[in-house]
Length: 391
Image 1 (cartoon, one colour):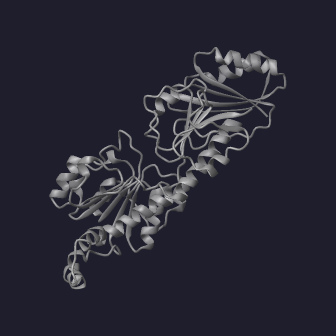
Image 2 (cartoon, helix red, strand yellow):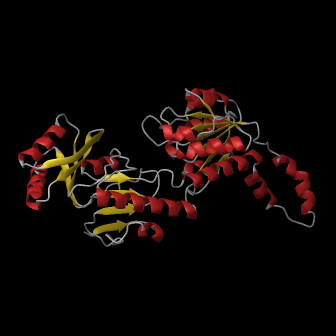
């Protein structure tokens, strides 16, 4: 079987090669593809084709994808967590160093000078940009995932005291965080103690406006805020007041909006945090590998809307089911199999929110029996999508 893939944006060709020979890359010409691969393309408002089974985002954020709508249609949405983590880490650390010494302001000032005595002018005016060192300063890291953990570790190596806050940090990530990074159980501890604060969390109703009047009121004067995660994590009206009051010395972000531009103490970079050549390649490779695994085996890893489900395929047939997460569905699935006198080789079912995903491996070589079982599943109003994978 050959799977049709529609690509949006410029996806690195080396990454697309990870799909292998069972995939046909149709660019934007595919009318009813099996899968999408994209970067920043906005899919909100788009009607998904009936055949679409998967969307792979070559990047971490999925705000450009209507995830709830995709889930209801039985479309698995993947991202590539960690693939651009090093690029974002370097952008944040560079921003901390640039802001500590105001190198951007100093460069802009130097370029206004003219005349034979430019060296003299520079010597006379350089004291305005002396700045401070980051060694011994305290960095607060909100969100200790792939990006936050790297920033915390490397900031320690640069001589900073590091506080980390993340109530949901995974065990795997926790093992990779330096023992010198002090974990705090309350985000308010970050606000109260840090000279620099960087945030690396997804945008949710709970994280929106993490930086607001209440949090700014807890901060010491002269703090620098770095936001390379999502623009809406910061309430701009409250930020402007905090800058005016001298609480926030600098706000640095790569999520630019018109109200942030050309304002003192605010630095807006283009959205380039994770856009290095290496990061784009890593994201494309991971997206290609993840999509290939799902389409060829039905296994799910790195999905934002369905659970991780991995099971070795050794039976002649595998049926994948996306179903509503309601009681007795596993029993109903098993009963449907037994009624056709088919033996289950292996079954795994995991849920996430309102939906669940099932891998059903059948010790059965009769294609007609399998087809009848699939027809029964497709007739069930609680089953959203059915796929058959033949070993």
